[in-house]
Image (tube, rainbow, N blue to C red):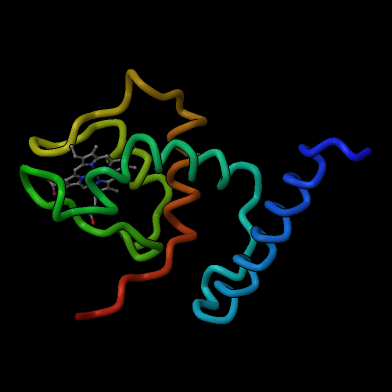
Length: 118
Ligand code: HEC
């Protein structure tokens, strides 16, 4: 008898492939696969930055700009510096993250497609 987990695993992998294919059709910018550094950045971004930057309407204070490869002219060093320094309305992350983690986040931001003009 097959262990039920084996089936579960196969199902979720199939769903992932389907999702990846669907997004490749609807949004070519996402067709690129993220490398390990960018994946690390994505994880950190989703837990620490997305609250303000992916849902600007929910962030209660100043609305945060949508980030993309166009942010700060796509300059990873400038993005990293911004994350470390912060501003009056954005916290500094210099104590939360190592330089390597901040750099990974900057690399991930550079994979984000530019927001479409509304
Ligand atoms: C508490 C909400 C908040 C969180 C959390 C936050 N930010 Fe921000 N961020 C802002 C706001 C507000 C601005 C605009 C600040 C300004 O211009 O003074 C901003 C601006 C930026 C900018 C500059 C954008 C531009 O076009 O000038 C970058 C880059 C950035 N954030 C990256 C990040 C990253 C990466 C993280 C996670 C590590 C993060 N932020 C977490 C609120 C936030």
